[in-house]
Image 1 (tube, rainbow over the protein chains, first blue to last red):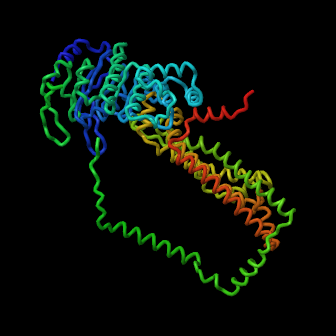
Image 2: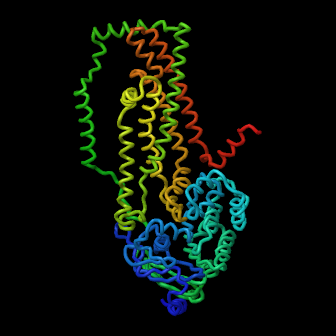
Image 3: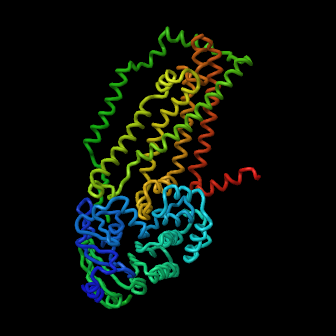
Length: 273
Length: 301
């Protein structure tokens, strides 16, 4: 399904390209095909929402972009650099230019909120600096973290132990970590899955604010209404294939075929969203 | 991405039965080979020797000179165990870092290429081999080696405990660091962090309670081991124990054994108390809090 976005992107060529996947295939051991020849180009300043049923390959796609997984076939380029055969040092430098908020928050429960958030900077400082940060925080670091946490409405939790926070608060800590890293690309895997609707708006507004600062934001979402409201471009994956790539208004009211992992095909109507 | 589910229905498994029978056979065979015979206790000659030994134990030696000397040796034993454990931590930690296997597709040979992949495995197996060597030689044998190297006294005892415990703690630490939730490790790596930063911010905080518990337990073991190092001239209460045994001064042996028993019980209780406190805590102490508490304890100038 080719939308206006793809047509206009075709005209844009590689200018402003931040992510390009060419026939990316990811097959897990056991023959499970998570991504099946995905080709897509994402451009600087876009706020992309990736939709699709569980098991569609959304998380795999983000992990491939981050270099945590390697594609079984095809090529992935991030910020002009191919991930194929990339050296460890180069991959680290590349990662310091992008952030990934993973599913289930993945915070370190025994560390303070401040330390969990400052982990976003680990790619930009030396190991000695990291060790120092674990033992002592400078005034600037405290202020910086407090400012980001304040924007996410958990400024009072600066030195709370992360394990003692609620699920929604932990989710916001994970988002704060990504924001503090000040990356060019922010990727988030279901960042509002475990928060209440009001907090979801707070979090999504932060992503929108970052997007307005020129950063590329890629969000895996299950909430179609939020995707339609906040994203400038939508991708829909089903069984590892891209079944929709277009503007939110093109998605609205359209019936899209989704094929679940059970092999059933169903029509999904997006009009009600 | 879910993997196909595995059936947990046990049913009859011929292989499991075969393994069970083989283990039982091995136990019986070993008992036969080692001359295992409980009736040896009841033989007339042995009963007489045991009676003579038991009769000699009472009353225990309580002369002030002997008690003073033995107390000095008990303290020395404690000191050997403390320094030995401290040294072991210093050597075991860096070795355990090298002996921690890093997982993830980004570290595969296909992703990294032959040379980095090979270097990583050489480092890993090299560190593991060093730890195996340290662990494989018992404390008493290490003590004999160090007595030859640095002479008699508590110092070879310290080195012996440090060497053996380095092997044990290094392996335990490495296993702990490896067993940390891989998703959290991946999240930290996703920030661009190197493996040392991942260790500091993820592997260490997550494994800290068990890390401390293992270390305390090793100190308890070292305490017990330090009591016999004196048998080979490596200091501690064992030095007096072997002399008293050789002189058939069983009443002195009784006093020394009672002192050793009291010390071991005290150390066990202390270790148990601390380990329970650490493991039962709602979450481990974060470094910043620990530092603040430490600073608060310092005298104000």
